[in-house]
Image (cartoon, rainbow, N blue to C red):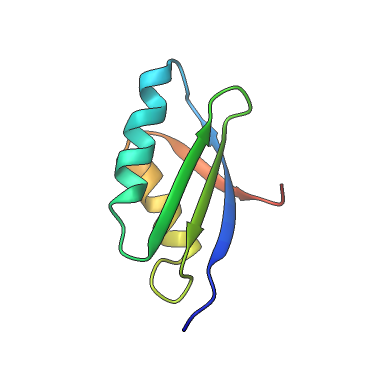
Length: 75
């Protein structure tokens, strides 16, 4: 069994609460992702995932497909 990792991404381009739903839906579709929580006020995306199935690059790409830029963050 693989351990679940929690990755935090900082996102750019949030303009409304519906942005949150778009990102959560797009990232949540990835295999290996067990939870996605978008923090609208701080522009952070918290993702619980299996790093062997969904890499950080995969997560960033999914946010990109939703129409927003993101980068890995330390917190």
